[in-house]
Amino acid sequence: MKRILTFCTIILMLISSFGCILGLDLDPMSLEEMTAATEIITQDVYWTRFGKTYHMFEDCQALQGSTVFTGTVEDAFDAGHKYLCRFCASRAGIDNTEIRIEEE
Ligand SMILES: [Zn+2]
Image (cartoon, rainbow, N blue to C red; front, side, top):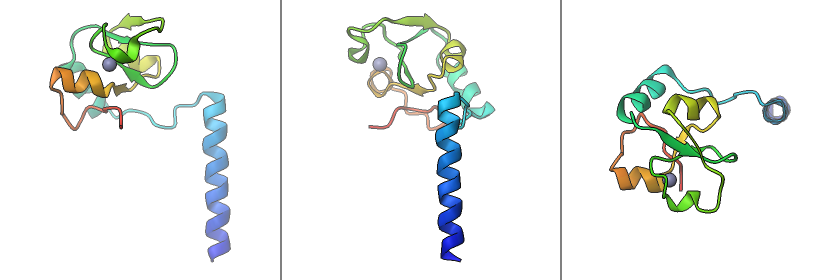
């Protein structure tokens, strides 16, 4: 029984790493999460080419020195940036649990 569990774990790990390589979205956002974010953050947001976060402030410390893209929250999600930067979240006073906020 333990062997089967180990085997399943390995298969799952393989699937998820292949998914990442292929660019599959293994962590899709729920409609509730998208709605909460787009209702609360109506301004344009900022993100960089890499990473998973987006920002509410163009002068955020995490954006320094990077090429910054801008657009709506939906644009950021489409680009794979699903987590609100924790610096921007605290600066804007956002602690809504339905919005995905970057973990420390
Ligand atoms: Zn930020």
